[in-house]
Image (cartoon, rainbow, N blue to C red; front, side, top):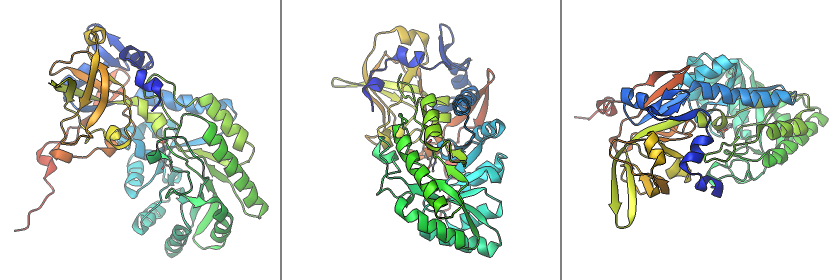
Length: 436
Ligand SMILES: *Cc1c(COP(=O)(O)O)cnc(C)c1O
């Protein structure tokens, strides 16, 4: 990750996050609520999400798009954070959803998001998943291959319904992000090669059970510059024109997600520049525009609170061992992701710092949240907030090492609400059976 991120010290991390504030007595507060009060009430590790932050980020995005006179419908990418309480906020904001499994689709239904406002993406949708989503009236299916198109046609045909489909084009654009989260390069498993789209679109128009309505693309995640979008959207616009020239009707362009956030003290995707790019490349096509952001909307709106179990010195190396681990927040182990980590105590922010590795108790070397991070002395029981963990955090957690799932709390309007109780240890095996 960028050097700017690595260099961000504790005061810079705090200053870059307006929803956080440090109070002499209460310590670190999030949306006005002392995080220590949440940890006192519900223990650690605990996820904390801020409803106000989610709403503010949604408003910033839609305002930037509206300023370009763009009517873009936001379909929140559920995989970033699928909690019903989070989906409920998006429903109230009027957002649709983007899902990648039947489970995610049924979560949106449970949260009250209209099926017609849901887009189903993903490279492998099983026939039972497709049938159930079609039966519930899902609004759009993003098709990732010729084989899948035939499958959807057969299933919808049997069910006597018509699936609105868009073809996901692989624009062969390098999003300039981590190789494990780039999706729009030829050679990735995602999407359909551009040269195959026109014939497949025509085929879709002739098949029963499907109605091709447009093109989709999604080039990757944690993208910090509008440049790769400009390149990809120009290719999408050219494709829309080519399809129309061939006499095919195109009414939808799904722009995907991937807007990046600042994990250090650097800014995330510049929204005004992004919106200007959308307007310039695809604003005049006369299509319904969809956007599928996940991380941008919820990443900075969440954090993982954890307590220090102990500090240990091994040779000249200093380790801070937390009660949170890679089974809770997997991103550092999976992507070498950088997360800011702030102590909850006001005094700790004044104390001199020295480099420490901040690790969890899981028996894997990869169970490390930060390497050589300047941190003040942290006594057993002292607490930290692992920042920007609202996206791809709890959704990726597991119970590895027989560690129960952490609790989750939603802060809203100066109050906090338990939205997932901590899993008990006995719940870990309550569904297991031992044959006689
Ligand atoms: C993951 C994904 C998204 C959301 O990506 P973010 O980087 O979280 O914005 C959107 N669309 C598709 C198809 C995805 O797979």
